[in-house]
Length: 177
Image (cartoon, rainbow, N blue to C red):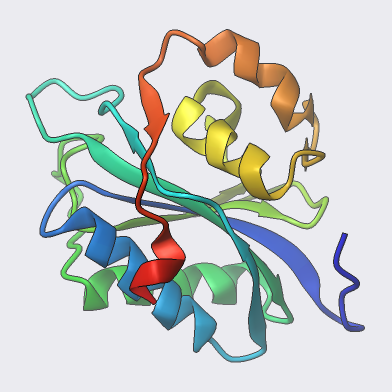
């Protein structure tokens, strides 16, 4: 466990992409996360390839990863910065978009310390993270003892997602940074 500086919180960010060179999208997003003010990258999982979940139309597989950061940014400010990184990587969000559509980049604030947050446009912990192998497997790489507030140890949910196709890639994100 990394000691955090006073006033910082350990946050977990999920990264995903299935368009426009997904490995490169994830690597560039991590570079942008490393440049966030009052935020330090602590750990990054390996890349994982997973089948799309909850989408009606066929689409390419996703490349996913999890990053752990120490941040002094409040949750809304951190989310705003993550959404800004998405926009810089050509992610467009529109009210009429199909849920779980293919995307150049998806950055989710999964955990923000041990806090539970339910405000407009932000729910932490992410409400479906315990149901998604593409989140739980990489999270296990970098923070095996992670607790999902209100649910318990994240690794206990792995058995419930065994049927979801997710596989570690040979290509590590850090080689692309």
